[in-house]
Image (cartoon, rainbow, N blue to C red):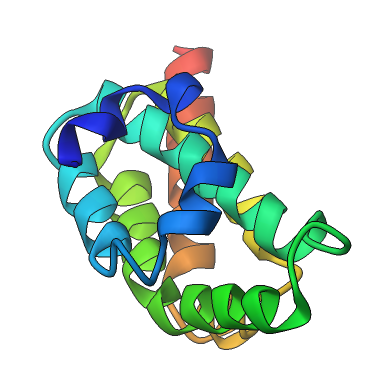
Length: 141
């Protein structure tokens, strides 16, 4: 199933909502692992994670049973640490502006439901400040 991760347009979140986590328990570790192998794949996977977050946390009302929606939310929350580490990895290691932009958009979708400790008790803010200041330095030069 890992080859499907290359095609986000052919892999709508509705399919994921049916298959994950029951039939594809390793989805989050799979997508995180695949993302670290290739920056364009990582950018596509960030889009998938962003869309999944939107579907589960923002648009699930009326589309899923309350039990299924709660299960998806609980699973996403319990596995978010892996997604967060991927976002940190990208912010610390990538210079690709498109990937950084996708990662920031993905993080933005998570902000309304992740524990605040991920923002204020990690190096994320300092990493973002370093990234922004280095981008300004590059553009000024």
